[in-house]
Image (cartoon, rainbow, N blue to C red):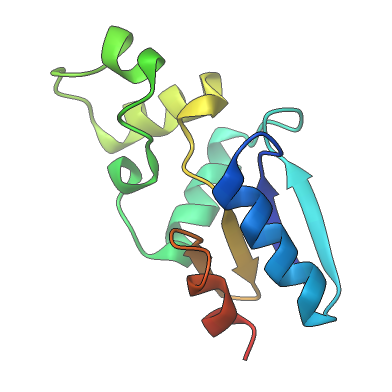
Length: 114
């Protein structure tokens, strides 16, 4: 099953959703601002993406700049920050089985659908 972690207010996330809709494949939409991923969910996503936590953070968000920028945080602390402040999570994230991508640019999602 394909999952997209989606923020309807984000243009890139909407583009990613459109790619999935046009693919004809079944998928699940997770509006992660409403259904906030747990710390363990985020760790699982990071394993699939194969990236360190900081690469999943939207470092230009005001919350990051105000609370976390310039601080020396462990990977675990970064994951906790995202779980407590889901606006910090990069989007869209698309997971298919044991593979995943951050859909920036959204065309990266197409490679996952082949």
